[in-house]
Length: 327
Image (cartoon, rainbow, N blue to C red):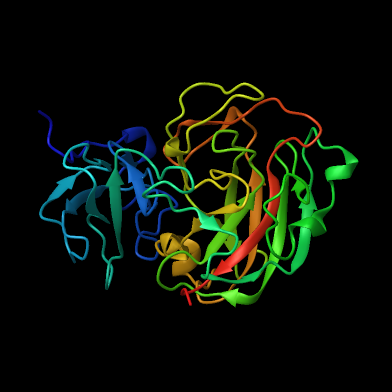
């Protein structure tokens, strides 16, 4: 039986291992890995940058300040037994002459799969009338439509205001399209998710997906990490299982939004160097994922969704909600 977490030793000499590798400044930028609050069992965390010499570790204590042990290497494989369970993962660079060498620390809730459809136990779906909703996107900053969208679906203003939960009343982004919206007042990282994105899925299985990114200034955006367990192409009107999808907008049917927690971005360079202020997030960008597998998730797996579609192709955005504490 393999251990619940294992480290992969060694590094690629062609990349210039060690703290002297060209272009690396690990005193100001810590190691990076995908950060999803909920992640699938057996997920392989590959820490960047590739040219650094790292060591990794973990603890079963979600609040631990250090791992139970360190291993030289740049990978951790999350456990697939005794689920669900928290795992706090760590990484740090070796041999640095820094006053306070930065490191990576993030707590994952490891589960067999991702949350189920709206209405089922364990679902994270946010209903359009959820008491946590405290506001809606108020302005369109920019939009770029992808392929397969007829004129009747190219109305960006339909993404503003409250979600309707209907098949109509949406803006279709097309294959690879994207839209940037403004939030007022700004979002601030707190307890639980701060953002929910609503699509118009006809049922629990017809799911069109998008990536989500946020910004404080409208220039520097950080994307949320995502994961998919769907390992085969999906036909134009075939169904998917929401339990296979993490960190992707559109995993719930119409009337229910996919939540996003700003805290999952806390280890990003953009946050650490001040370009993204998690206390003042004003912009959200929704980017359609072409369903043919050309894009990959944060673990390197192809992302599939119904493809090809026409007329109202791609992600159909109903609304974006700002979330706060329930009343």
